[in-house]
Length: 83
Image (tube, rainbow, N blue to C red; front, side, top):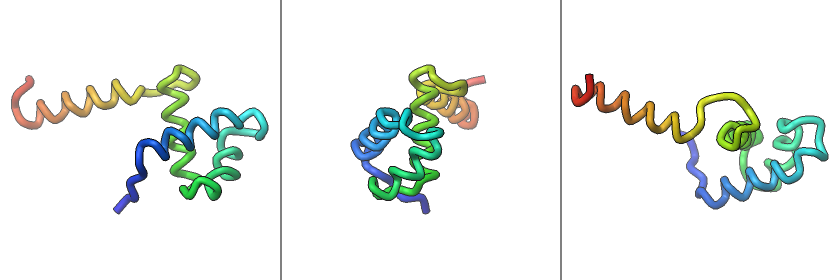
């Protein structure tokens, strides 16, 4: 089962990476260097950072808000409440 991290820890970790990413070759390199200091796995941190970049418009992809809306719509369709 995936480990759940407090939202405050996630936000602090993402902010730290985004603030320091210019000092590394890539966001992934920053995640690999900072993850052990933050107590999270580098891949977990990379996913958080990637989603944050999408949400603020620095990367292409589905925003968190849009993904949540799509999940709600799919749930309603499954329950037969939306055609």
